[in-house]
Amino acid sequence: MLHIIFLQNIFFLGYNPDMIHILCLNPTIDRMYYIDSFLPGFQYHGNQGESYPGGKGMNILRVLSEFVSPLSFYAFTAGGNGEIIKREAERLKALSVFIEVQGETRTTINIMDKKMGRETEIKEKGPFVSQDEALYLYSILEERIKENDIVMLSGSLPEGMDKDAYLKISRIADKKGASVLLDTGGSLLKSSLPGKYYLIKPNENEIREFFDDYSSPLSLLSRKLQEKGAENVRVTRGGEGAYFVGREREYEIRVPKINVVSTIGSGDSTLAGFAYGLYCSLPLIDTLSLALSFGSSNALHREVGRVEKEEIEEIRRKIEIKEAGTHAF
Image (cartoon, rainbow, N blue to C red; front, side, top):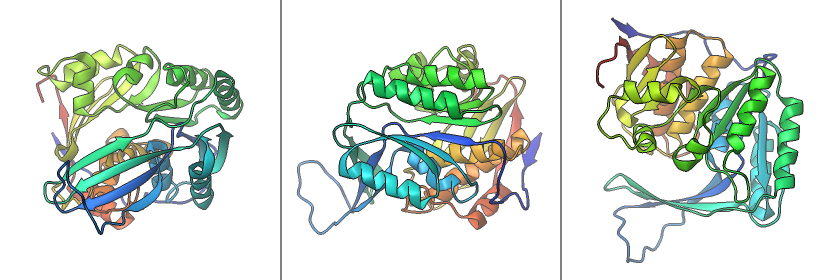
């Protein structure tokens, strides 16, 4: 059965007794360069680039701040770049906790090849976080997370933090009765399991790499991830949409074709949309369509973490969600 989802009047900026906690433990200053045709080994002149505070958690904060207030934001910060992160969170009116560490908040270089549509990233490691500083973060989360809150864990960890830091935080949240959304991959995802997560959001490459399985249906791989502690799994597939596996049902989600400007931050925007649907207690199918609409709206802009309400509603009218069985997809 095919569902075409369209909700009206879902956007509001107001107070909800539940809090969304956004963790951006390894923030960055993103430096974007747009090159007509990028090849290694050549010099490129005349492109001044664009800089903005980044990291997956910061992108999520930027999106959600348009719809929810207040939000809780947590970051390790260092040096002059760390001050830029602080000012951006202040501009977005977040209830922020910054733990100042030694060194310098990292920089990420993004090169967009406009001709080929390819993105190249160069990522610094970032500052070192001591065990005492990590323990201080855990103690703050123990104090601030409450029942029915939403905790968002995404991106990389700074040097020095234990690789199972997300697992430790998920246990704090679970003990408090909060829902945890996890978006990370590779060895960090392995170190975060087995845990208890309301949602794990890998992309197709990440989940196949995780299981070293490049042929099995996504439904099978998602069920295997559920066995490791994910209540729900949503596998994003770029312009092809997503595949969702819940406790009882599976859904195939198709998104309309759009004129993509940049996909940077679209995964983060998708997770923000899912969190917003959960925050508003929307039905699952409506939350799924909202999430993919957020991601598509972001892809229409050069600015990372920018979504427009009118675009979201227009895209949501065209999203197709159908219930799937255990067939290959």
